[in-house]
Length: 327
Image (tube, rainbow, N blue to C red):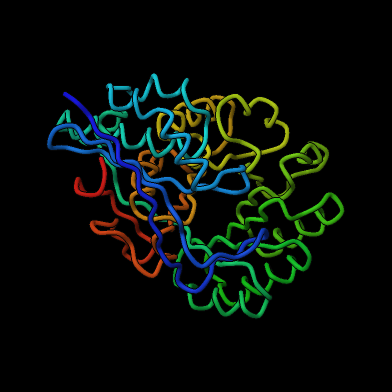
């Protein structure tokens, strides 16, 4: 049966702004790949990320190079060798998973070898800002069991302390997005211990994270920008205690599942993360949630409006997708 590939670029305003160490943005710009086959279609959503030298134009161009093979019946296994890990492959891979599940008449989690998906607790992100601003944001969210605190480099010890003051009962994850240095690493680690932080994401630049081998990691440290797929795991064993798996980094669910298995074999704990995007991007990532110590799939909660048939959030409890959304 013939196929048709459709690409679209969609814009979703963010509630307020989303601020990390690299800057701020006020909307999520996503690329959606839809692969139609007869009266069914599979969809996948990705977020081009400048940190990885991606743009909407480069991602759509990458996908267009495979229009012929996709429309001729390319499957997700063959796809892995045709595009590198990254946002473009993620959109196509997840669309193929969705199409395969709909064609087979079974949930995508069954194709992944799971018996079911259950509701999970997701982190909720507090954007970087001054300590006072972050304290106010944390106060408004202190009913949530898990907060992820975006940091910015200089002054982070004060930010961490301020958030803990107004969210005394929430578990905390902090995410430096590569903004710390070897010079302030020890001070910031001590601030995290004092605040009872449970995990620190990517404190140092990926190009300079070897310094993590030389310190006592008094709080577990999680690789984000330092790991994309299975091939990067081995050198990280002495530097990190956990890895953050994001489908936009791995290039889709297929590699993400393989990365998770490889990471577990090496003793890494798993965190499942996301870019700021809609429920269509969160849904396939939920297939990794059962094996994750931390789930950070709050993208739609940061938007002013999600797409139709979006995921159900009850506070921080996230429910599995409906068939109308994905899988």
